[in-house]
Length: 530
Image (cartoon, rainbow, N blue to C red):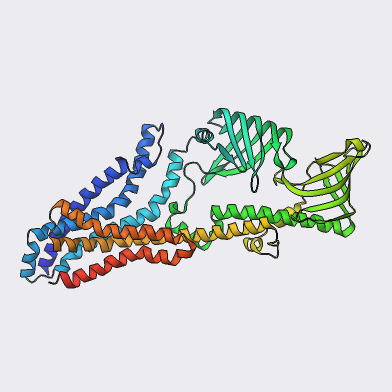
């Protein structure tokens, strides 16, 4: 037994030296010599920021290089010993060569464990670290976003500016000479200009929010047949943003992956699709409520800001597009001062529009072929929009309280509405894709970690068989099985993301490892014994 211990320590020391030197060299080359470092735009980083960033990048590179270093060290060390006939001497002394592979197993376990920790706990923290290092100057970050070809995204708005002034201390940005486009459900809804836009930015641990105000707007509105309109002030509601890198499943640590695997509805992409579905379902609920109120006594009454709207009509219902319309409508508007005016229209339609209040949505009433009493027949308007009115609070709360299951249920709002059907499909697709991507990342990380063990053992065995004492020979011997495993993991992960090839993808991820493990068994039980 002492001779086994002496030989194992001898081999372990040689392994550790080769492993350490190879890992340091590869980490330096990949991390600083054009690999990971070039994947990140440092810009005008200060020397202090650059040093901190190097401290983040080197461990990331180490996660990629440690398995390769362990594989190369095992192949090189055992190949050199085999080339020097040291294993022939051991066999002649009655020593079991398989037992001498214990140092290789130890190095592979340590390398695999380090890789597992780096991939599952350290690298995911890179997102937060880059937010602190690169995205610390929020004002400058938004200036860079404005310089992009598509401009700055603020919810449904896409904004470009001729000139930007920023106050980094207060996180306030003022845009001058602004052009904007507002995107609706399927296409643009408004395009125009604003003399000035003031953005207020607040940051938290997950990123931050940006809100603002547009001043002196001039724009064309698609739904009003490209009518040219003007407004003095319009509020931009708060919008979430990420400072450096957008949230991605591959940046989640192991605990977060299992968390979102159990609660995919909380992943930001699913939340975004669910919010869009909530808007579509809410619109249907509000319009159905309006129609139901009218059917009770053929009259509608709304109060907003001291004004009272009373609407009567000869008939009403839903048109082919699912919109609520009243025919032969009379609208009486009473102001807070008691004065009243009456519109008479052949048709009145209801829709939901964005407002400037906290809820962001209001009820829009549009009149077609309408005339204001006392103006004469010649003053008839083909189409006119009344001031939006507030939606009842209880209805807003009811919509906000709808669970994901209720939103996806046809009992709350029918799938006959094409917009709702499309939004429900998007939520289901986003949920399924999130689960598949999480599964792919989990299998990729576990497979990559476990592959270190089977590859290093095989590298040591091949080094003994081919007597690969030369560095080039050792590298070539270790490269082939590693390539097989990597191709299997990468190809399998892509298949996992596809719903039709999900199960096949999982099998492909592990196929290379199983293949190498079988070669391990065959090599250790058959070849080395001979």
